[in-house]
Amino acid sequence: MKQVTSILKMFFFALLLIGGTACTSNFADINRKDYEVDKNELGRENYNLGATLRGLQGLVVPVKEHLYQFIEALAAGPYAGYFGATNPWTTKFETYNPSVDWQDKTFSDVFTETYPLYRDLRDQSDDPVALALSKLLRVAIMHRMTDMYGPIPYSKIVDEQGGISLSVPYDSQADVYKQMLKELDEVDVVLKENLNLGTEAFRKFDDVYYGDMNKWHKYTNSLKLRMAIRMSYVDPATAQQAAEAAVSAGVITSNADNAWLTVEENRASMIFNGWNDHRVGADIISYMNGYNDPRRPKMFTTVKLDEKVGGQNVKVDGYAGIRIGIDVANKDEVKDRYSKPVIATESPYLWMNAAEITFLRAEGALRGWNMGGDAKSLYEQAITLSFDQYGLTGADTYVADSQNKPQAYTDPMRTYSVAAPASTITIAWQDGDDKFEANLERIITQKWIAMFPCTVEAWSEYRRTGYPKLLPVVVNNSGGVINDKVIKIRRLWYPPREYSNNQYITEAVKMLGGDDNGATPLWWDKKPRTP
Image (tube, rainbow, N blue to C red):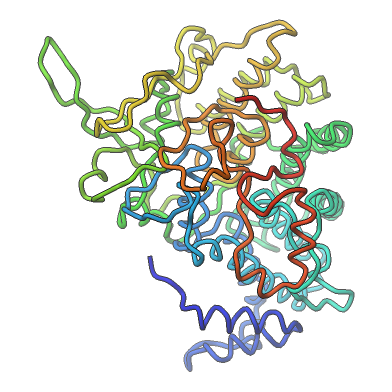
């Protein structure tokens, strides 16, 4: 992977910390080529507005290949059981000992790329819809950040004059959630007042919903529902109120409203297809193999596997995942032994789908909340939506399956196989109040499959609920700090650079209620754990 030099990164970060609108424009002027248009030229047809909106959209799930790799493939993806590395790195997130520069990428780069765009959009436009969309996108981006780290700078980054600085006090995660939910309500009001706005107003600036405010309105409330469910173990009363309000206002219920970011070229595809640095994780493949899941051909590539037929060893097409945190000696020896995600240069980036939102409603209904349906029906509806998303039939047969269970992991390299599966959960719903926990595991497990590859969300739900049950990492280099026999890493820790650049970091650590390491649970991570 190409690395941004430390000198350039420190220079950019210092410029941003100075604050004021000049830092971004000065940085742009320094790097502007003679043939590039400047801000005044761009603003003639609202191209500035389009550039900033598109830029923010490109950070919800990072579209830049290196930032995508660090967050989605190297950190959150393995922790979610979705991806594993084939590259022979000895220091990596998977084994809980990433290098200092890796730590900085997942934290500082998101802030330093988001806030110049956010400030520029606020400077360039007083259009209430544009401002609402920018606020919504900031929540979508920073919601992932707080769910990876806990306390983050948030409410004080933008001052009363509209200036921006990152060297400000942190907010506790509870306060970040409170502020974000308030902002989502504000966005909801604006979008609701503009549901009849023609798509032409924002179509050419919007690569998700192409100016359709009805769909943005549903996305807003779906994001609110996602955040509300996250609070279910720490503040169930507020969680229920927010969740019911979101569903009442209108959430995503159809695949036609799924949030996909369409790009000219999906740069993340090269991570799997060109660089071959990552493959699909053993966990999700083991579950879906055990369930004989018909979605596998739509999600993963096949590999040649050894199988005995009539007493003879033969090669058959199948699906194989890679254990998280293994020692890889040679990439070329392993890259063809494990399945890849089905991803191409024309593939869009998934933010959120109807299946995930319907699973959220199923969990809310399981808890006794008003979600517009009963838990069992919503659970089965969510699975059907996932099948429909992939153009598949057969969901009725799948949801009725009470026999198939996750498969024990067999390593095609014959090195890291596991005798027993991580879970024995079946698919079919079980009636009865005593089945609450088993049905919760079903909901989360099936949601985890359906929302692949939404890595940060999957990792967050795993930490919140303990589901799906995942295999421990093979090599744990945390020095005994992280006990992943109970649960994998609970959070990412702040990079060393933050301790140098932000004087308020010590207060942020106090807000954690524990040490700044991967074993300290986040604010919403309150479900009791047992070995």
